[in-house]
Image (spheres, rainbow, N blue to C red):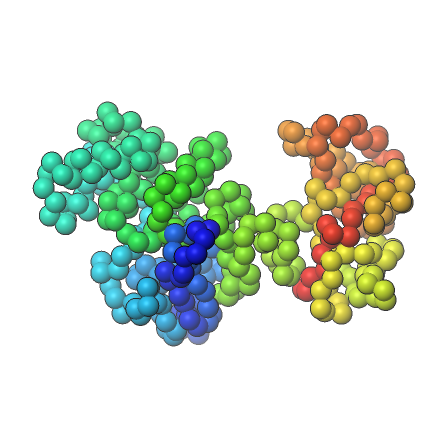
Length: 354
């Protein structure tokens, strides 16, 4: 996140209702100038409705949108210094790459030579081959069309770019390439990006901060590291990747007890009396003795799954199934169906509310 920059966009109690249903419920949020903010959440949580209000395509029912100190609730999309990159891309199929990119410049009345020069400059920024300038956009690959749509958005010279799941239709390898390119483009341009996705991986790779939505509300905002390692509740913990969850209650001496797995566990504590112990699979490990970790349980090694450079194991402690991961370099695991000790350190577990 850019250091020392104040908010470019502020939301105050922003709400959107459709009849009796509330899609976005009294959201307060500040977006810093020049940051890459990703809004994540399950389908139907309200993230696309929120984005459409920010872009001017939906009118808020209540609340306020403030851009650089000015309320813009009633400002139409074409008068906002913002641009939305749609999931469908919305390119002109009968036009060339250059014509698609230069279209906003033509609308502004820029002379032909100047807009061609600017379009070619944006092509270089988006890593589009120069000889594609005269190519029909339908002859471009999916990844190239994504870059054309992004270049056209930059041609509007917006202060904020909104993205509505633009990579969701791409294959995995291309998606991973474009995630990194988009993050590089953000850094080079200095623009503010607000990105919508349901993909944990996209959010973790690209974002300065992540806002997690559920049922119309933002439940946590933080850096990828904060969201992943310090979720505020069970929903955030489970949404942001695979996690082991044990219903638990606070006990004496900073210990927590669970009815599902016998023992008293030491983890980073919360304020509630009842909740859940959450531990990421990479923090669990197979240990040789009960002294090798702060928390140790006995389990049966049930199954093993190859994840390339990592190996994932599923173990059973009583009726509870737990998942742990370790690097292949750690060494060979015991045979399946044998009894093992599984441990984790107190700093790697967290007690959260439901």
